Length: 448
Image (cartoon, rainbow, N blue to C red; front, top):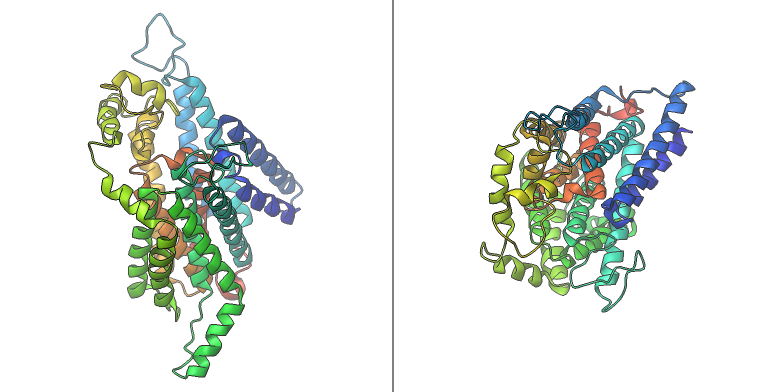
């Protein structure tokens, strides 16, 4: 039964991006039903006393903030708590769009149960490695699917009949969602690859180096490396400016840190990292249109972009709802009243996750979510520096890149509003803490 639940968890991870990135309400409802069903199996298993009901203590740093978000969303839905409401209407709640707040409450409950399951079943080094491979496999599938559609002109997507366009979107509804998702999968894949690098020196003899090179080419490392190249190609094909920039900035920053502070650096770490920038970004990128990404970056200006105007007009909205927000999921309902004028497009999101969460949930709750991310980032860095198990260090490297990427990308986009991106990022946060807590060596069977 334990293996069945873990397998269901892996299938869920692979399924996340397929139904339009789990962004549409029907896809989110289906995902919630699936996660709840798996969690009920976990409850039954715990009732049979075959497995502990509660996850390890380290999980409180993720589950606690998510539980607080659910509490705030519940408070926003309580009738009669809005002090500025019409006294004649005592049923007015804090949320200005209760139906959307209910959807966000359900979404957060899904995230909470999902994180609970990850902490409860990824309790060994073997399970940790397997869950990482599932994330990489899901990213590879999206990369191959998106690349195929992008390189076939005038093709209609086999999934949901979407008409494809110049920028790769895969099974998502928005190219930047795909870029963000691929970056998360890429980061974790790079971490797993680093964990497989040898720690021992082969010496200076040519035969030894040649033998090592052939071993790498014939091993699973080569398959993983090719998978990462495929994902980078798809990332470039999204033409996402911040999606590409944030990933390579995060990778460069964490790599530079690892060169100096990574405990027991693998022998080919420096060569591997350099290959991502020389082989993947420059050579492979030139073949698949990295110049178009550069052109979009160069052509970006405050005059051509309206996102800065959205942020500027959203500040008064934030000031009027600092503590408890306007209600989860209510940005597109609240924003038009503060919009100074028409824009070039319809903005149902703020294109800034920090701002949107602050407006909808209030500044204190958003700050707590930010602390959750920063704590996971701190634990990942600590694992890279202090732990000696290659797998834990490699996973921590990937988690650090992914978290830093999300911190950067969220300043100009709203990837966390998509279920696939949000839940994949929750996996990253969970793995950051799990890799810091799992014991080493013979004691790696589990932890409390």
